[in-house]
Amino acid sequence: MVFACTRLTSIVKILKKSKEVVEESNPQQRVLRRLFRYSFSDWKLILLGSFFLFIVSSAEVFVPLLTGRLLSSVAYKDPYPKFRTNLLLFVGAYFIGILFGGFRLWVFSVCVARLSIRLRTKLFQTYLQQEIGFFDTHESGKLLSRLNHDTEIMSTTVANNVSQCIGSVFKFIGIILVMFKLNAYLTLICIVGTPVILVVIKLSGNTSRRVSEKVQNLTADSSEVSEEAIQSIRTVRSFANENGEIKRYTSILQQAYGALVAQAGLASVQKWFVDMGSVGLSATILTYGAKLVRENRLPGSDMLSFIMCQLALGPILSDISQIYSSLKTAAGASESVFEYIDRSIEQKPSGDYKPDEFRGEIEFQDVTLTYPARPNEKAISNVSFRIEPGKTYAFVGPSGSGKSTCLNLLERFYDPNEGKVLIDGHEIQEYDHKYLHQKITLVGQEPILFNRTIRQNILYAMDENEDENQEKSEAAVVEQDAIVESAAKEADAHTFISGLVDGYNTPCGQRGTQLSGGQKQRVSIARAIIRKPNILLLDEATSALDPISERLIQESLVQNNQQKRTVLISAHRLSTFEKCDRIFVICKGKLVEQGSHEELMAIENGVYQELVRRQLTDLGDSQL
Ligand SMILES: Nc1ncnc2c1ncn2[C@@H]1O[C@H](COP(=O)(O)OP(=O)(O)OP(=O)(O)O)[C@@H](O)[C@H]1O
Image (cartoon, rainbow, N blue to C red; front, side):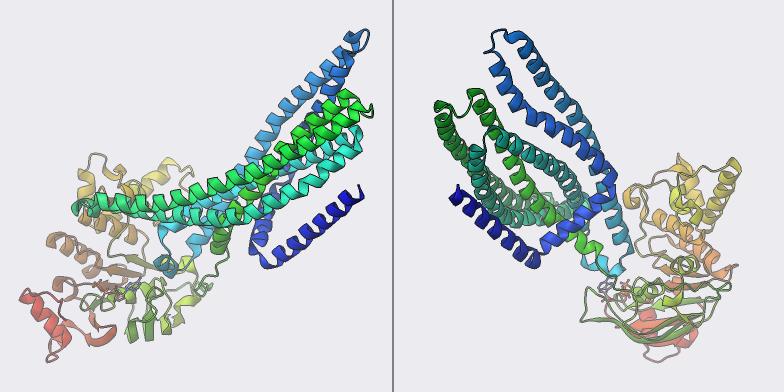
């Protein structure tokens, strides 16, 4: 007895010490604590679920005791009244366990769903607030895997474990109390054996965490590959590289399979140890118990109850071992999710400057930008220019020279590493985010449409459209339709849209794949101008259009610029830029020439002159 107690105390000390060391050095513990804090915001539900669990566990604890009593009542002279009472109690305990078990399941499933929603919303919100450079350096497949897969692991594991853990603790305490009541010596044997099993669980849990981290990373890689292949199916098909993509995908799955097999093997070994430990314990108890019964120190029915209690302890320990290893899995998933949630945005936050008057005068002062994905290469360096409001400017130059980069800076996709971008004399960072993007709109090189109708895509730019579910009056819908139609006309899109069977209600497909390149460009121009921006940025926005459509759009946006917008165009075609008020010639990230078409043509051996000459002789600009 003394030996048993000493052993128990030393094991408890070792466990305590190792816990302190692990807590200090192991960030996983911090991550898990944080995850639990997330789930504890549903404390009322958890409390309710715990109450149901308490009832279920209490009912289950009484079953072994009642079984023994049921058996001993048969030995009475007139066994039936006693037997009936015990039978009723026995069935009642089971019934209560089943009934409240259902309630418990329901409450904890609600907790899982709520936690999952909270985690996903938080992570999605975090993603959307990151600077654009973040998306240049983080693969979208990985981000989506964290959002869909890892948050699911976190919520199910945590909520289920909270439930399982509370249930196991209740049952464990209840059963130990019943066992003490039946026989203290036998109970002490049980208690001494239990920590040994717990140490096995702990040791295997550490390895299991490493393996599960690997599985999660490989799962993220596989979603990256599959997502890229599906999104680029046209390129895959045109190079007949379906098998190559399948091979890439299956090779990652194979690696994940290897890790999963190792994980399953580890779980089995752990289960063997735990179960074998339980069997060893049972054999010891049976031997000693039989001796006590033989010596009339313990009634046979109590021995039976004790064995049933001890058998019930096995699954509880097994549950605890599973809780431990699945918590390790959740810790792996949480680490990467929290890493994103905690990421500090590497861009100065927008200010709150919202002037009543916005003229649209732009100034670049010695601007240099290095993209985060290519930190050793300057995309543009020391670029300075001034743009007057209400005029049209063009950025011209060879491919990759830095034209789009200048426009990206005006959208604040990136902030300059050096120099300043000023609008109406104020640094662009000072402006309120929403305000700035109401005043400046970009039509990109490869416009992306959403998987919605043409009408919804154009209306995407209207602020009041933020809540799509909001009911609108008939008059408001008619007014909105008129606005959409007028924007589409200005973008020369109305004719082709009206020609479609479903007109403005035609779906565009994912990323606009159900429309032609030129149609997509026109819808995206309509989407940009419906916002009535003061500064319109057109980055190769008409490159896919036929010359007639391009001329029509130019006439409405540039020549008949009734709203006196400032228009900045990045273009390769002479027809697009020659009539602009002023042209900036960008070459290798530097502003090398500026002036009107005529002024630039007058520069002997100038870059612009060469560019035009090559276009006219149809050589293209690739060698500039
Ligand atoms: N997101 C990015 N991350 C890293 N480098 C980039 C990124 N976008 C552009 N670059 C690089 O910056 C340089 C300037 O690119 P930019 O898109 O401004 O050229 P451009 O003149 O608009 O070219 P094009 O006429 O072909 O559209 C190029 O070398 C390009 O490879």
